[in-house]
Amino acid sequence: MMERDEAATRFMAVVDRLLKAARGELQPTGAAILAAIDQGVGSDSRSLANSLGIAHALVLREISTLSGTMLHVVRRDDRTQRTFVELTVRAQTIALAASTAVNEHSVSNSALPETP
Image 1: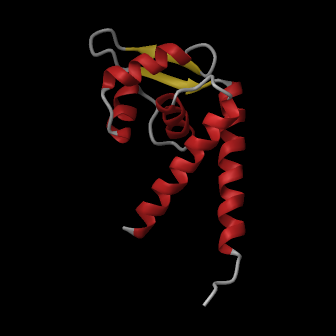
Image 2 (image 1 turned 60 degrees about the vertical axis):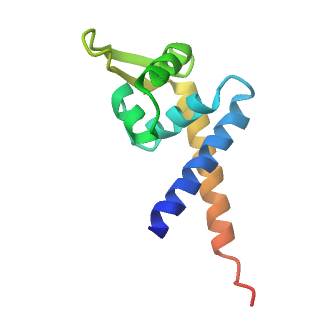
């Protein structure tokens, strides 16, 4: 349970870094979607919606908003509206920087001696 809490905390820290790095180009939902794709949580709208605990329609709306700038639509199922996406080069760069910053921060904090 503790590992799950730590993973959730790291995920939210990456989302926060993405929001700052994108300088107003991302909404929190969009940043969460980019972080989830970058971390391998999902690559299609349905799995992303389930993993993030949000409505599929909200994920589809964010995909539409981010398509071309941060996301590339790989394919779409017309019947179910499930949309498969990948990060653009720009989004990969921002996500890598955000993840690296969070990981470096985690490592530097874990290297500190514990205080009594």
